[in-house]
Image: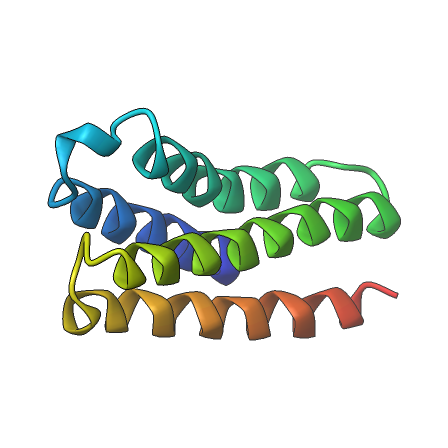
Length: 110
């Protein structure tokens, strides 16, 4: 499934980026960001195993919520100067594209 593959790639990129964060954030933003990122492909995978489109749509909604949460946390990291905007740009763009794709896919399930 394409959105799952893209979610996995986005999560990998987020983890590579987190290695550049200050170690003092290990239990703060790093923890929050990594949980959000992993939640995206995990919920897509779990939803795809469900027996109804309604259940699948529910898990896609959770994945979508995690993407918006992730975007917010990464923007906060930029504002706090933990990472520079140029490094974050491609990841933010992939998050926005995945948000659009999941939203569009959810509409096909109704």
